Image 1 (cartoon, rainbow, N blue to C red):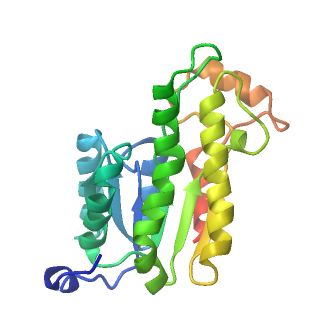
Image 2 (tube, rainbow, N blue to C red; image 1 turned 180 degrees about the horizontal axis):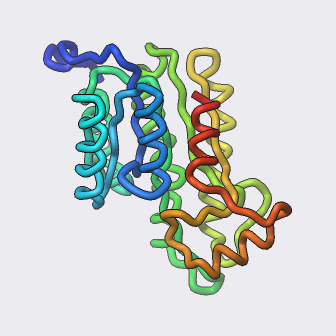
Length: 234
């Protein structure tokens, strides 16, 4: 991919970050943290258009022309080149790519389908790899970074009833570790693997309470914890 003349004319002087699935929940918290850190923001969304527009307007009210949104289906592999092209053309550069978008639902053994495998592996493993590859030249040029939002269950602590999700997140974790070697020293590659989270989550209060009770400190992670980790890795 090469930048056209129009894109070259709008290359940002600010560092630029893209957050996949950035319109709501943890993604929204990450967008706000990056914006506060003086990044221009590209908010990727799939179906959450109204939330993305609201967040873009909120950021632009604070700092004009500092946020844009791009729509894309991360499970449609054929459209990923066009999506990454729109990401680059938003501000003409990219300094930070945050892989936040994720599919999460149970797959009880005995009822697992091939469609479950496709759904969970596409968003949680395959797409982050290929988006990273498409955007590699721009991240290399800016000496930027890739940060993935993983899950404590990807690191030898599988979540009961979620076999395919566990496997997909474990694959994503290995991608992070592999790319950290492959892309050094030009691009830093790191991940955040939070424990149980509630705010903005799709799980119930009772389910979160059971998860929290199973941790050593009997507590979960909130958006501010993840924001702090992101700030450190930046």
